[in-house]
Length: 338
Image 1: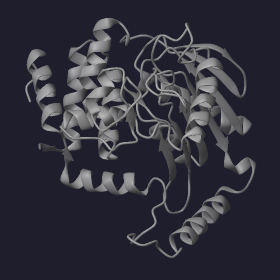
Image 2 (image 1 turned 45 degrees about the vertical axis):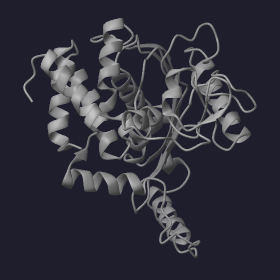
Image 3 (image 1 turned 30 degrees about the vertical axis):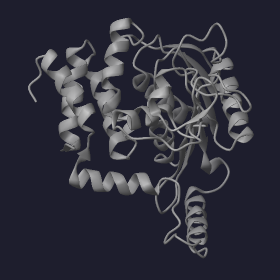
């Protein structure tokens, strides 16, 4: 398996998108997000998606060099039409707007419609946490998940992320409301691996460990049964209906991520240093709980990503042979020297 430095992958990804019609600014932004996902250990949202993005560009579902439009705005809210530009570019703009508004008003809510894919949500919620705020991001996605009690795709995997600062690093909740994100099933397929039963149903509604069923009308399952289903449905309402992007099962939904972002200014409730210290104490209390059999440590959400990023920055990012071969072929086609 190739192990490649982050800087190399960043440069190569930028070149691929520029050669495919993106502006340099767009290419840098997308490359930054994809490689950051690989660094965090979320390879399903990393450079693996390059071929998909290029295909969507060819189909006009991702449009380079478009300007997002703020459709309406006041001191605490805004709705942004992404015009099907690169999701990372639009979403980063939206979170910056959310942070600025929250800095003035204490709280902000920004909606995004008409983007294909914004990537890993934790990147955006962490932007707020790094600025001394609490960040919340949620979005709906294309139909890939069955509702609790159903067997057909009607909901997206509908992820959510919340980030908050502390003296010991950022608390980072970031997960899909399906048992696992769809791209992780695709990654297992590309690696020639089976998936655990309980992740998916095949098109006949039977549990399966075959990741290829995701390409043949297989449906992901919600985590926690009815609880994950309820959260996914709520996110479809907030990310889909409220933003105007459309809920996954409705006629107005085309594809992509209807996204809602919130930024909360902590200092409007409690001094920031006090908040961060109290979160640190909370983390310490959690970590000091006696360990269950088979466990040597209790991790705080966000710790695995930070540790993986530190290791991969030092040692390099492992890339599956199939993913790397595909990217090599793309580079050859675009006459990019590797």
